[in-house]
Figure 1: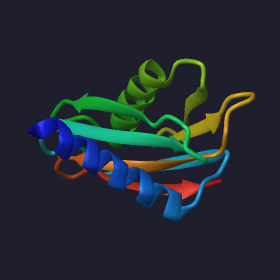
Figure 2: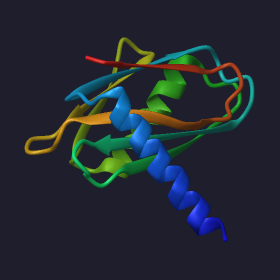
Figure 3: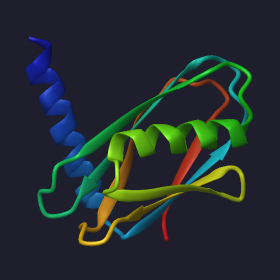
Figure 4: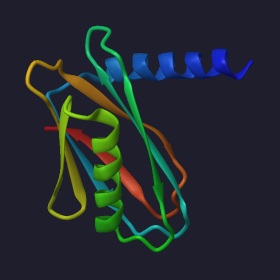
Length: 124
């Protein structure tokens, strides 16, 4: 019973991501310290029906915004492999760039259960 619901939710997020637009590079700006443990789930959705990629990152209580950014960078790298280049910029920002031959994409915050951590997404 849960699989159809999950599939519907992912389809809805992909549709929302398409409505927000796509770009070749995104900046994920993290602010605030982790006042609780939790997780951040991000989804990268290539344009024109490409296969979405989801990354789930566990965050420990007490992590600084720079630490959260590093954790997300590492989680995204593990999830996307060489399809995207993922790096930390300015300590608290994560840049996600499409790889050679990849389509433009959108980034969606599927879930953020970490109290005190805010995420702002901007196409570059």
